[in-house]
Length: 304
Image 1 (cartoon, rainbow, N blue to C red):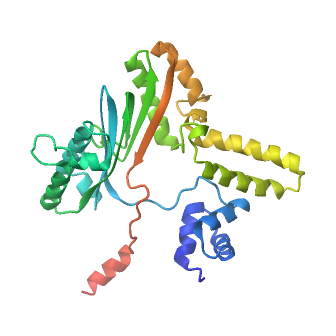
Image 2: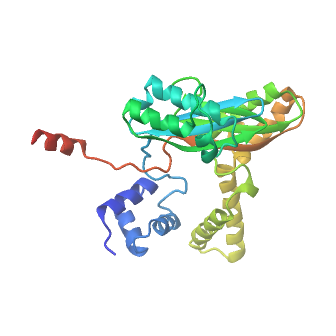
Image 3: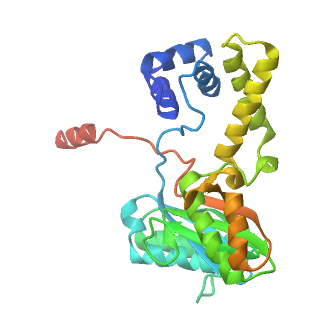
């Protein structure tokens, strides 16, 4: 397989590794990106948490909540200019409000009644496309039930921004105190982007992948198998601390883990409390946008 420059660039964006290292990794793995990432990691050249390139979808994330739970939605537009448009912001806010009466699935939200009108959310989006003159779509939605705290980062208005987080807690104590602590946890989730709530929620395939990489790294040290096993378990514990929400150092007070901070917060809540789930929507994550050479576009336009 021919290793193209664009493939090398993609791997560099994902791992932060050097160009020649990326080319060697792709050559060794037949151009398979995921295997090339693992190859680089086994060589100690790339980190596990380096994310691929920048995401590019524009639009807004909206959140809404009531006493029964909270929802988060993502509505995409073609340009950030439209995302700053008052009409588009009202659309996203109304979609989030309408989503509160649904189970949080995209299908249910799309078929829900648009606030103050006799049409569905789906039709409201189509009408907005015709009015604003730009393609847009309800990309995803989710819901958590119970006592739920919300947080919006890079806010452009009430409940609207580039990143939205929901955190659900279960407690018989003071709900307002629980939501106050939950909001701090939501800010933490916005900053750290954990993979899972706790160890049991982790994708076991991801855990085994890490174990295999750690094992190869440890064997490269030439130590005996019994020592290697202990090294691997130690690295896995560190991995859990990095990616599991309750095991992470709390960004509000790094001297405590999130679960220990929760234990402290129970004094204010007045009863035992448990974090039961979280949802984090970052605008455009996982969506690729075709990159353009602006200078070339200008030059082409100048030529007529």
